[in-house]
Image (tube, rainbow, N blue to C red; front, side, top):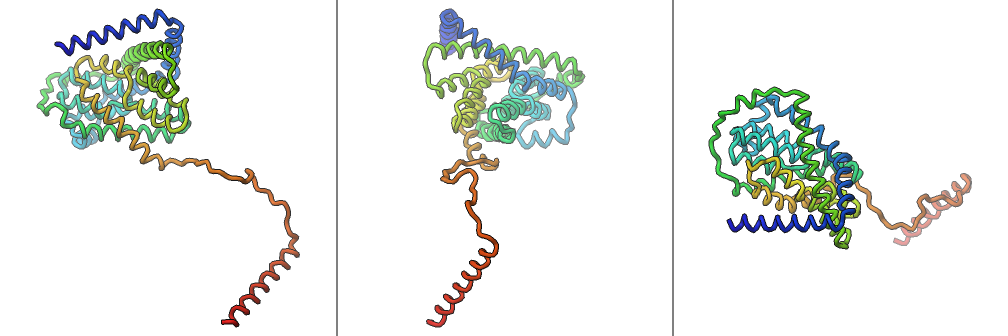
Length: 352
């Protein structure tokens, strides 16, 4: 009770400070709203909406058991439904993972342990965001974006393995409502409607936390690195863009940190989508471990990509020969050097 009371007081104090900031700096709030809307329209919706529609369609289709059962056994999942949701989460990102986990848990189709493990394994940024936005638009390398996407999944697996002792105990699931849930037909209009509703909720969270970050940064003169960290703590998309503007090593490893810790915006989206069906304490521990594992994997495997290294040179960009010997003079000089070397060899041989 005391813990809940303290948390409510902290939330109330944060809301009061935010209201004061909105009243004192309305221009910064308006700029933050515009930036958040631009981020949603320019990067978040193009990256997430198509994948969310595809995941909605996949969720209503029966995937082959020959694929799901070995995956479930390999990752320690009890139900093949959890394995199917994990594949959709790797394609659609953390929003799809949270929504499918909450639906399966509410329907009684997966256990509490499977739900928690599914969140640890599947809570990630989707390929559209990592490869398309971060890799192609921010870093200028699709190959680097693909490497970041694969390594974040590897970090998910390693962090989940370290968090296994914290998961609930395995239990038997009575699949009482599985028949009605599996009998739901997948239709394109329904998938588009559901994906649009979820994307609207996500964009609301992004804009709200972008406004909060803009008001906070307007009231303090921070260095560029600290400002990028504040942006990443509030919202992952703006944080990645802020780190990309820094250049150097801070860009790559700052983006890794933002992808691992997710930011308040993503945590708000997860709480909204999970609706209390899955506790997020274990997920929080997992993301802290992810923040240590992910940059280490990137540093170890970055060499697989072709890179350019600048070196010092005193030569001109193009070396131009100032003069050339004529062919006859070059042949005479070669014969002369050959005779000279032969005479030297003979003299050295005779002295021995």
